[in-house]
Image (cartoon, rainbow, N blue to C red; front, top):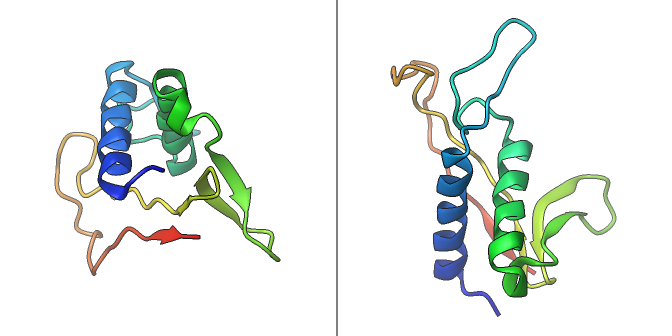
Amino acid sequence: MIELPELVIDFCGALLAVYATKPQGKSKKRMYEPGVGPLQERITVNLAFEHLKDHKSELYGTAKPRRYPNGWHLCDMVIDKEWAIEFRLLRPFGERWEARRTLGGKYFVSVLRE
């Protein structure tokens, strides 16, 4: 069983590993600087879990998005039917580390245990 502190530390480490590969996001109008910041949330989460599957397959080998019961929405990541995780990636800074004025209000990350 994976405990929450281990899951958080592992995911943060995976994000750093993905960042080190210098992925590059793009829009219809431009290419962004390398890094995970401009990537879509779904892509960032999937890249991080692919890293975890490669490096800690005994814990994260079955991790994947799954549908919620009786619904069509996907949960971002389900691990061994132990954890159902919804991610919210916050981007408080722009591409050149400029604070965004539009980022306001209270934000939270919800981790739901099945």
